[in-house]
Amino acid sequence: MNKSRAITSQEKAIVTAMLSHITANTDQFPVSETVTQYGDPYMGSINFDNDRPDLYDGDLVQCKYVDTDGVKVVLSLTKDKEGKLLDLDFWKENFTPLVQYPTPEIVDYNVK
Image (cartoon, rainbow, N blue to C red; front, side):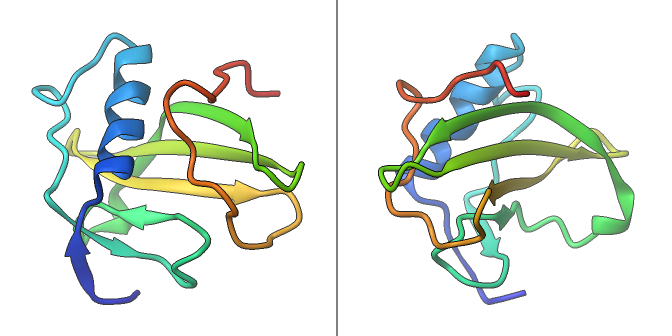
């Protein structure tokens, strides 16, 4: 993993929207003010400075959007076995970097 950095307002907005979709909030799942990017910074996946990925306990919520290059991107917000946020994972169908970071208004929660 790369070095920790401050969470961006875009990242915080999408995480908050995803939690809201499952009627959860940042009181139940506090969002770390620092995150660590996985791999290439243009892929979007972050860890919420949770140094215990071995405690992965599943997805809280998924959503998708179509990037401006026409490629589908799936986002998964995950939690650990202690009930803390673990990751915000991005999966772009063709594994290319994100062109546009998603906003809450453009995501779709019907992930198939």
